Amino acid sequence: MQGAQLALAVFVLSLATFIVILDATIINVAIPHIASSFAASPNEGTWVITSYAVAEALTIPLSDWLATRFGLVRTLVAAILGFAGFSILCGVAPSLQVLVAFRVLQGLSGGPLIPLSQTLIVRISPPKKAEMVMGLWMMTSIIAPIAGPIAGGILADTLGWRWAFYLNVPVALLCAGLALPLFRAFETAPRKGGIDFIGFGLLALWVGSLQVALDTGEDLDWFASPRICTLLGVSAAAFVLFLIWEITEDRPAVDLRIFRYRGFAVSAAAMSLAFGAFFASIILMPLWLQLGMNYTATQAGQVLACQGALGILAAPLAAALMTRIDPRLIMSSGLAILAAAIFCRSGFAITVGFGEMIVPQLAMGIGIPFFFVPLMTLSLKAVRPSETAAASGVINFVRTIAAAIATAIVVSVWNGQTRIAHASLASILKSPDAFLQQLEKTGLSASQAAQSLDSMAWNQSMMLAANAVSIGLSSVLALTAACIWLMPRPKPS
Image 1 (tube, one colour):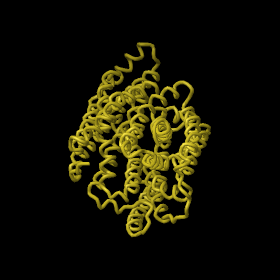
Image 2 (cartoon, rainbow, N blue to C red):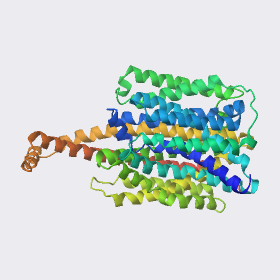
Image 3 (cartoon, one colour):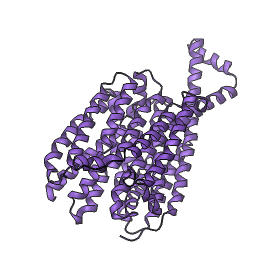
Image 4 (cartoon, rainbow, N blue to C red):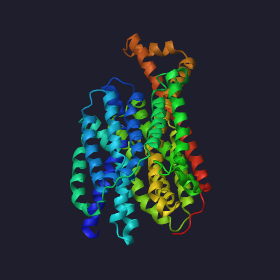
């Protein structure tokens, strides 16, 4: 493609990718609204995020087979229309359980859109413009997480959280309507091909069992529950069988053989640790702001969105520096900035203001592209050209599944640390009776004064727990920054 046609095609593919990534973050700030509307806890509300991420991750390895079996463009359009249909169903869901079920189906539809769009980007781009076009398409990975919290917060506080799903419908229909005539010449002929049903089944079993255990473990008292122990045992056994089967299978669902390349193996490990820690941090931040600091969803979204102010400028800079500086230095620097920014949160007090939270968020906007852009490029260059598609599928799978698992773990740890901090504060509180009497003098009844004191203690406990989790997340990022140097020195392009 050339000229205006190429520009329109890149816009359509970027927009389709945009709404898929947007839906991973648009309801982050709306979790308290969703939980309260269904009389559920915030911990249960995060199932809406993790179920989508897990389902999306599971269909990424199937993308190549779907495109081969039904045609590249047909599969793309069907995925877009499926995403629109299940977005409507998410919006009208009458209960949390039904919403989670529809989010799974929405994730299954959206999962193939990223690798299929990437494939079409490569096919439609002139060789001399391939890197520029791919860079423009990759900007959606940076812009979507920025737009998500802002849009989600405004919608949750005005029209309602359900409109976060309805918003997808006109955008998806526009993409589907333009994709058919634009990419008709690039359609591939459908042909029958085998699929590794056993490998895919084992993948779904170990990932699904692990995620359910992580999502429900806190409510069921973890290892004291036979159900949790059974789920974790099933997950571990299925994972071992999955590894054995995929390594020995001729046409595996997930080609694990590409991990023989040290560069790719380190890239995948870095992606899982760094992206998991980063994504969990942007889930925890709005939860704490709304539950512990009484921020509105819109205000929480504005805090998160600040990280994009410098991110859009840093992305092209990171791409340009790759040709002049060792990419490992760029990635480790980006991770160091992320680690420092999240560590700054560990010093927050309950009196922290909006302005004090902006500086770490701005720094995160620099760190994200400095890590993400070089890693995505080097992970594909680390393998043979014939294995690029497999590497792209695996790295996207690792990124998505790490986000889901890290979210479940961090929210559970935060809730647990909050309860521990609350018990500790209650035990060391000096002269509570005198303080309650002072509150009663302001006109509060005895029960209202006790409730006010308890509310203060819970807010402080959430703050202390968030600080502790921030230290843990920053430690993971700092460790990953050091591990980047295990990657072999990239060869000049």
